[in-house]
Length: 247
Image (cartoon, rainbow, N blue to C red; front, side, top):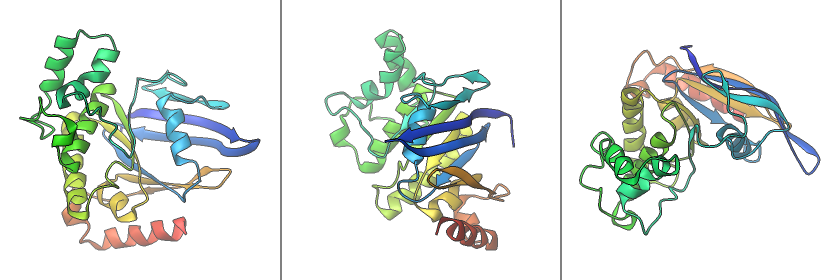
């Protein structure tokens, strides 16, 4: 693994007196895409709420480059399944919102956000409104906003699940490319095993409750693109392994 950018140690959380997360620990290396899989109700979204700082654990800590950020939102980008774009704001103002919240002057925030539009495939959309964008373009805008929230690491909670199959694959492929170019570290929730194997460097399997990380599977991509890798024997072998652990 590369230098650890983002980690958590011994996270515990209960609901209604029942232990949901029990000593959950994980490490994400620099520029890694790591997928988190597990059955519904196992606590994936709860763990993300804790990792993002919007919820505090009963025990354990969250670290970003070795600094304790437990219960401190705003350090890590967090994108949920719905894009949550503000319909009354332009795409540029939506993207720049994290910078404004962090205290930057509006004009400076808009200029900084606009400088990334071409890289994110959004050039020409700066003054459009979300309702004028396709589903895929809305997700690109939401991903740019997530990136501007926290340049080091991002938490993505099923960001492509609402898209049609072709758009979903295009965005998966696009994200693996943009992820490398911007130097992002990503933890990614998905229920789609093919998606996890296509784009991940590692796959974590949550088991429970009480939930733990039951398996950590390395995906031997060897630099192959998602399109090429899914045609290999290794892709099918890992897919079978993941299915056997998730059922």
